[in-house]
Amino acid sequence: MAEKSFKKRISNGDLLVGTFIKTPNYQIVEILSSCNIPFIALDAEHAPFTKTDLDTCLLAAKPDTPVVVRVPSLAEHDALSVLDMGANGIIFPHINNQEDATRAVNISKYKSVEFKSGRRGFSNSSRSGQYGDVNIDQMIGSSNSSVSVICQIEEGKAVENINEIVNVNGIDCLFIGRADLAVTLGCDDINDKKVNDAIDEVIVAAKKAGISLGIYLPDARSLNQWSEKGFSFFIVGSDQSHLKYSISQIINN
Image (cartoon, rainbow, N blue to C red; front, side):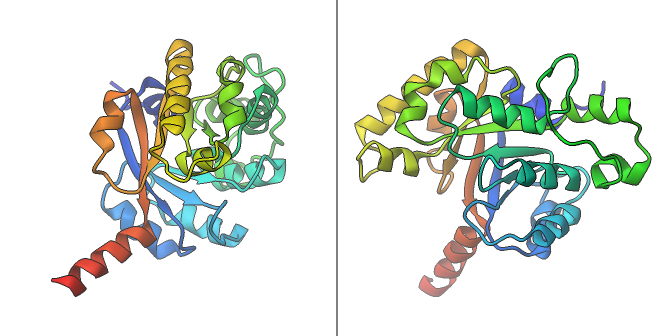
């Protein structure tokens, strides 16, 4: 039996635990990839990645290590660049309504029978097209069926519009950003009841729509708790937080 694609594993709700990389260095990707980590997330929203950094980091991962990129915005050129470089998926920040979610899907997908409004610009001359070896039909089919679209829910207005968002075809995962969610709800604690109640609304809507759930956790201590709530896609800490923790353990022992 053929191994399930990364996209299929996300959408099926398979347990996937990865981490953010916030240091724009390909060797960090190479090291983490050698640890057989289920996936890596490059944080181009909150870390100073250039296009060259993203390109070399994507190239540094082993072929069997999926890499997703959190882009800075819904700008079409950001999504196009990382997909042409060979990213397995994109995390789109601040998806607040149906229009945002639709745009995220459309700029990630080529126009096709399933995605009639797809608007990803076509070029098979990049890494994703094997530098010209993949023809148009093959590339449209393989890319549309393998690129993951992950929508970050991190504002109160996103929660208000969650039932509209989950009706958008092509979303593989809703990824909760508790820190921004807390701020927009007027809370100073990610564990505030308002935050948890908002997350519960997202959980209900996602489960009803058959969309998987993801969340960022600073460490793995509460992973099982969130897994029991229905979450399956976890980004735990970052290269920087893991390094900082490891050094503090050495110093304090």
